[in-house]
Amino acid sequence: MSETEASPETASAPVTAAAPETQASPGTAASPPESTRTGPGRLLVAVYGLFALSACARAGTQIATEFSRAPAAYVLSALAGVVYIVATVTLVNGSRTARRIAFVSCSVELVGVLAVGTWSVLDPASFPDATVWSTYGVGYGFVPLVLPVFGLLWLRRWARRRPVAADAPDLGRQ
Amino acid sequence: MNGAVPTTIIVVGLGLAAYALLTTARNRRVGLGLLVVLGVLEILLLVLVGLIVARLAGGGRPTGMVMLVGYLIAMPLVPVVAGFWGAMERSRWGPAVYAVAGLAAAILMVRLHEIWAVIHV
Image 1 (tube, chains in turn green, orange):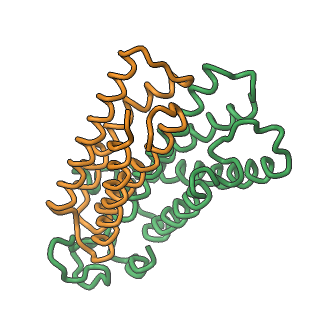
Image 2: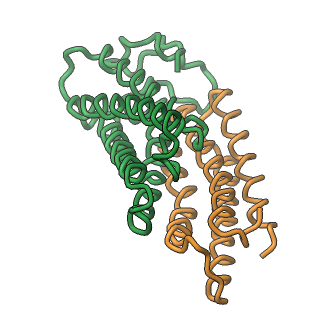
Image 3: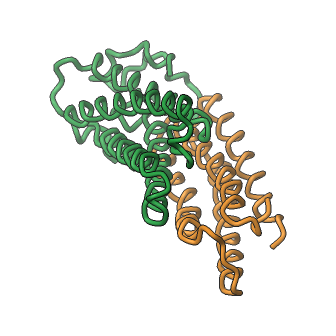
């Protein structure tokens, strides 16, 4: 993601040929990402969408079938699922308001994975069943820990790129 | 149920992920090769759904029935959604989406085995 960091000013001029990531290899786009859902954002949205699905499915079945067994863990699973849905939707939308909401949800997610991770390590008895965020997301390859960091970095890049830009919800829509 | 189909899905999924990440590293967008591998993965997942449904119809019942039904619905959707989402991208990040789909398919097989042990890997 770092090699695209070098061209923040090309946002308003997507056809700029000088952008460093536009190496002249066949089949490669000649423009930098146009919205929060294109470029690296395409991958972020995919991973967020996958986690939204799996966290919600997991929480849904746990709450529906065995809620009394570990209510705290299941409620936290559901919260994680909601946060992932919000992040997915707002990153796809990409308007200024959506980016703000995405920033909040990625922050909640980072705090959540750190807090729940620490809690589950210190007091494993509260977590007879794993949540997405247990032990910092170890059951999911620590992706839950890394994901909000990349989300926040991606959003920060957009905040820098257009400090006073108006909402542009239609930019890059296909 | 023998483990040939889930095992093949893991191999194809990991192969797709490697191929896709290589494509991303080479700064190429989604091409025909990736689409073909993704299509093969989709067919394999549909075959597995058919095998599991047949097993259910034959009277088999897992402990986590609700979860299993969720998997049967979600599993074949992964390559389809990833296919469209990645193909819309005109940069190296399209193949990266395909890599996620390949890894997800492989991980789903392991989870399926945990839900219902008769599904061997």
